[in-house]
Image (tube, rainbow, N blue to C red; front, top):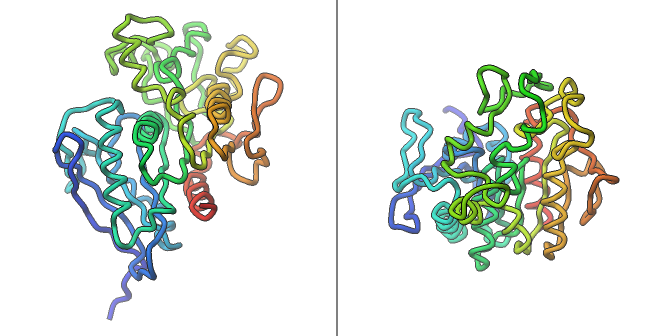
Length: 328
């Protein structure tokens, strides 16, 4: 008789804020001994999240006793076989997506095998926009912790404006096993803010744009929403950010020192805003980096960063998720 794996993957469907279907799936322990802690995963960029539970690290968390949930936001699908597209239209992690995330959280929190008192969210990159906005706009949600992997704090970060600090033609070496940046100008190999403008259809808001741009980004800047959170917030930040410049040591000389984004200033801005807003527990990176809880950072005091890039630490997000779920 074949040995069954210790985890099981199950699809689910629920309705979004506009009544459209949201398709997701979770991986959980096959043998349930009472309600389990849960982690809801939010993908980077404008990606589909339903397949995130297929990662080895997600299954490892399930084997340790967690329910790990992924879903496709409105209008999204990975395009892979059997990955169902959710209804509704793309909202760029704005209020529609934030409300849909709230619907997912309520659905998961109501499951008989989920411990709603130990439920949290992991957000990768631009996914932080949906997570922070959702938590702030729905304070009744049972979200106890938030793990943020190199998410942008404001429109300037999301729109790649910091790349203007480097002269045109600067090469783009990547540290460790980092993949090329998702948006790149073909003549320089550098991320191009114009490409981000094409993607979002809005300028940089308060950093230079129309009143319509300002209003649009006001609904999509995590630094506005994060201070309202009243759980545990952990920021994962590597030495070479996956989007913000410089991408590696070879580019450091191309930027004024210290450039606006050098040494993870955007991470420090988010952490400081969280502390100032009253978030009760805030930390940068894993215990091994030794950053203090509720420590503030600035030009003279930088957090200890993960060496290399996040691609060099593929299990870091799962370690952070497990730590915070255990602390709750």
